[in-house]
Every structure is written in C-alpha cells, then in structure tokens.
Length: 143
View 1 (cartoon, rainbow, N blue to C red):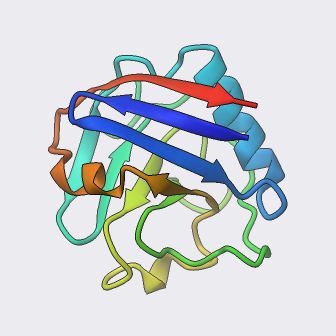
View 2: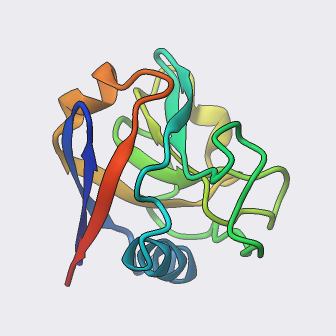
C-alpha cells in the first residue's frame, strides 16, 4: 500500500511502515480516504528539519477529535530524510498531524519519541520546496 500526497509544489509518493506502525498507518489511511487532509496547509516548515501538516485549523492546534497511541518499537523508528512521522503534544496524543523530515541532521532526538509510519520514496525534491502555507490538494491511497 502506498499513498500519493498531491501538493501545489508537486507529488510525493509514500510507502508505509505497516509492520512497524500498523495502527498509525491505519489511522492515516482512513483519514486520507475520508478526504480529511484535502485542502489543508503545511502549517509548520522548519528548514533542514521538517514540514508539518494535518491540522484542520491551520495553526497546529487541531486534530480529528480523538488521539492515538504511539508505536515506537518497530525497526523503522528513525527520522531519516523523507520519513513520515506523527506529530503530537506528548506521548499518545497524536491524531492527524504528521511531519516529513528534511534530513537526518536535526532529527535524531525524535527517534522512538514520535511514531515513524512511512517514507517518501518518490518526489523527495518536493519536501525541499514546500513553504509554510502551501496546500495539500489531496492524498490518495493506493492498495
């Protein structure tokens, strides 16, 4: 299963870490299939760190109305370039907000603190051109 994140700046294709983070992947996929992410913005962009989206309020304080538990024990819990990870306000408080890592330079402290649940395998160049306020046009899940 993969997802295509269509943005104003281009397309990113994502492979999921279904074995390592099955509940997080399921949550993200269900939200994407419901159209939750369509039209939302990247509300947080920090160069050489992350691009973050998934807040329905556009300012980083919103979610889907529920929380999910972190999944931190899998083999792929390292925040390398292109990795998708769940944003949260503390352990087990994630919901819809996610981030994509620019590089490994400044992300090691996130390992096993935020759930890595996928990786951009095509369109990595799009990560570098996303700016704060850019929109997610849609996320399509391909089974």
